[in-house]
Image (cartoon, rainbow, N blue to C red):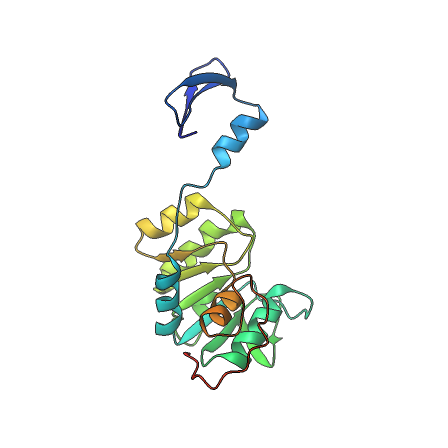
Length: 196
């Protein structure tokens, strides 16, 4: 299935299938909703993501939580302990996270971070991208499970590098020998120098 076109006023969509045939389906049908939800945006490949992580010196975590049960806390802990990044936490409702000050917004950070790692719901991503553009950061990394294709396209149109639906902790650990491709600890101890 490649293209969908809405037939004006009829409440149906004409769908062009991969084999070139077309058919009309109700616009409100589950199939129509599935076709609209298909992902067409493709972010940076593995080699590009590795380059992003290697070049970065600082990361701001937007939506960071002081709650140890939250994934942003776990990612922040990992980045503090297993990388050389300067890590900043952005949460207007917290004063401190993992022993560091929490900042109310990106504009309050002491420097422009190389990567803005985002733990916010998909509908919040466009406003976060606007905040990233306002401070002059170059990369937005939207965490695993969060997807907003329109925001990704918009960010790229504004000159940002956008990574979406990927965990920065998993990617960093995988590229640095600490994880299996599925994100699990390999248990491998190596004398090989790790890339940071």
